[in-house]
Amino acid sequence: MPRSFVTSGWIKVCGIRDIASAEAAAAAGASAIGLNSFAESPRFVAPSDAAHIVSVLSATGTLPIGLFVNHSQDELESIVAQAGLTAIQLHGDETPAFIDDLRQRHPDWAILKAFRIGDSLQPAAEFLAECNRLGISLSGCLLDARVDGSFGGTGTVAPWDLIARNYDRANWPPLILAGGLNPDNVAAAIRIVQPDGVDTASGVESSPGVKDTKLLVRFVAEARRAFESGSI
Image 1 (tube, rainbow, N blue to C red):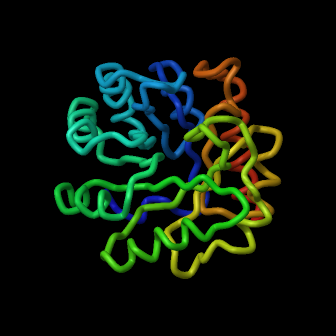
Image 2: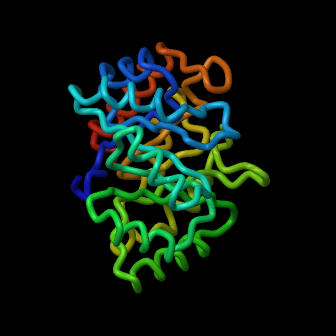
């Protein structure tokens, strides 16, 4: 798995729970899907079901990514093995040291790290500085909106202007924008923030954890159109 797989125009649909939604995302041209292993999330998918989805996607160009929130190393490794994953997204309070240990144990894994952004990027900056010190090469940084008591998937829009002004593109990993993105606002988000990629979960759902295929297809199409229009 190349560590720089997040390139300009990357589109991820997170919180996929069933094969039909995974196939719809792949057919629409999504770069990746997210498989959520956080048991408290309405988007949780069991490892055995994730394995079926991964198997279906193996014939497509869409990458399955496992999402984890404060899992122990043993739990994370077990789920990755059961599901047959090669890429993970850490969406909790994991430390650079935790990531460094994973990297040394699994050098073939691609690792994304999510940050919940409020009124400053300083916590992310400090985290990434420590990653640089440890020689950790993250595949991407996903910036979501900070909502107290939540690890993401709330539908709250991230602070686009703050991110656009302060994300250190020269020294930080590829930027993936998340937080409240949907078919109606993703083009504006791409124009303002100019991320390498975008990520949606609740923005393409009819209810929490239930994907709406029409919204999903529209989201991918709108994002693709914005990326290809030369907005970035």
